[in-house]
Length: 368
Image (cartoon, rainbow, N blue to C red; front, side, top):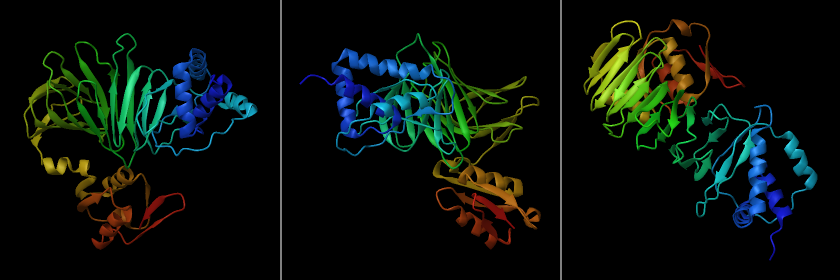
């Protein structure tokens, strides 16, 4: 039967609005594959989004299974109104995954979600779903808490930034096979693809890195105060403390630069640099240092500022101190991110660190 171009065009609009069903998506994908005019409309529509002013609303792409529904016509007036309301940028192309069609939607980015941003203007919100899609010539594969990026387009490189909010962690697998595991309140930026002679990333917060060996293409990790040069190794970086960076080496060998100082770090050693003074080196406990990968944080003689920061980072909640709580003794114990925050607060009470706590309607914890 002949292709209903009007209906395909309406489905293109519904896809952008995030209201398309699984059944309709199959029709849309088949239509833009088989008919050049349908494909041109689809591409023109997404290209037009990139030219609209404003950034209040940006395309995001949660990859979720959809439940088939009956075909419904999308009113023409509603479609026209939709075009007037959309603001933002981004071009997305679907890659079919059997049994798990992708969904594209135009939503405001949620600060509590993992976000992937492209320097060209596209912003995505990543959930725990699975799927594949293509963004600005970069192929993405999302599996739970991991995203893989790949492109063969060397003429149009993209600078990508992955931001992980409080209360989360997330992995990114780079095109060379290297893995970066970001802790909460952390971010990594890198070029896709890497430059021909150098692999380089910029990290803020905390991350565990497993770097694929490549002697002909050194791997550079840039931190706020330091730089790490790698050939192939596993290590942890931490820049939560704005005063310095900490680089802990588990295997292999890295060269750490901080200000005018530079040294080669050996496995089992941690370097701390602030960009001004001599780099300090000491031993570290790997199980304690990497506990965050299991959703744990080990506090050792933590003061009030450390406890506040820990609650914010691990549970994405704000903390205010009332009464005598700011005068308590230091606390040593474990924060378990995967359990309710009340479990940790009860530990503070049992240790007589605080007298009590309560929650406000706006998700603020008051320690007293």
